[in-house]
Length: 161
Image 1 (cartoon, rainbow, N blue to C red):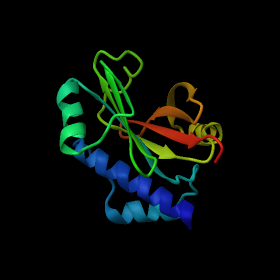
Image 2: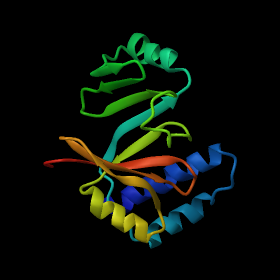
Image 3: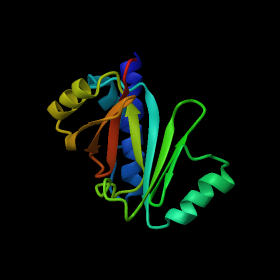
């Protein structure tokens, strides 16, 4: 049941994103029947990460820090990271930051999964195209992909969970 619910959330999110991009989407009945008849490739456990690449880096940083009251956990000229109390993370990249040039479609959401390599393999079997390799840090691993709506997303797993 959790897997069906996770898939339904993803299908609905993709439909909303696609609709906002001006392309046609299935009606509610098609979404419901598609979700009910499809076995999900991956069990999503939550949204844990948001990445934003922006030409208005200073304005965006000011918004997060002055308006929302977030304190950066990492700060440099072209990058800020904000760790939220629940463990989620927001990262803001300037256009000059060279590691995230593939963030061209807007904010990038990170879906929490149990195992990135297994989730990636299952998603690739369902026709999802991944961008580059699986990345890692001491605490997390992640991999970026293009959704059917053309937007960039990522799957993320916390090490040791």
